Image (cartoon, rainbow, N blue to C red; front, side, top):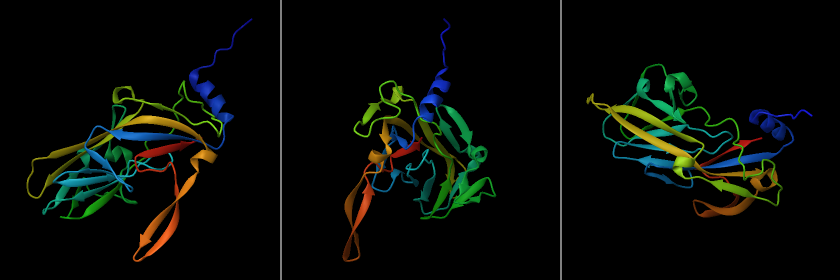
Length: 222
């Protein structure tokens, strides 16, 4: 009798075809001095502040770059890179934009105290298949797996080269991240919310906040 042997990619495709309304949530950690707030993951130095919010389907590397100096900060796009699992992509290759507009020059200038928004591509298209986490978990079951930096299946980051004012000596800031936890959720669990209070001027308003949502996470719907 012949045995049928399926490659891992075909087996995963068959499993996913039987799944609907599931979400893989990936938590992002950093080996850089970044701080996570309610709104963003932030790197700050005397020269600049870089703010990320990874949350979204497939994740987003888009970021705000603020000039903290009292001179104009010049970003050299030819020397800026996104690195995903050691694979480097330059900004022009990824068609990184200024918001929704394409950059027209190789050097982007940011006035003192101002910022620019850089629109970048998504981080990850496909889910990870994990031995100890069900691909299609029961709503009553939430399983997770954690990773140390060196064990993580996904490392990614940003390298930005810039100069300040009339100084032609380039500086480089590199923010490196890795996934340290992965959880597969049924839609019912993924969409759970809790009430929170938002104060606007002198009035308080109760709003619903998604439990799993955070600036240092992103998800992949499957």
